[in-house]
Length: 120
Image 1: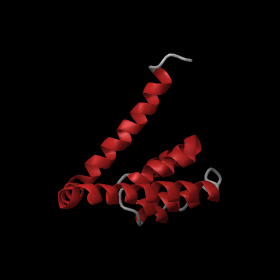
Image 2: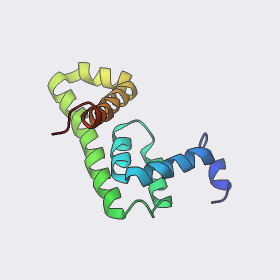
Image 3: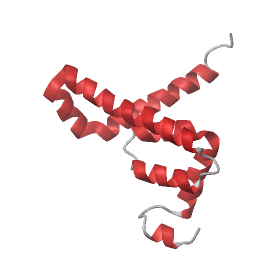
């Protein structure tokens, strides 16, 4: 890929690009699903999925996008429905921190289940 690509995306280096490719190779569905919930610019993730199309089949991209993005918006809507303006203000102010914390807890839960719980 030509270096002109990196000139137009600030802060996106060849190393970061290669790292995204490794994440797609590891588990494209989970990577896209996680990115759909976090404040990472989602269009960068979907464009990168096109670049790494060898690791990201179109049905995986669509399924993870539908589940992740709709899940994110339904969670926000549910919080606002039940807690009103207070929840809206809290989410607008701390959305990035909240989503990163929830995503970290999700990953931590999977790690705990895999390594800390005894095999059944």
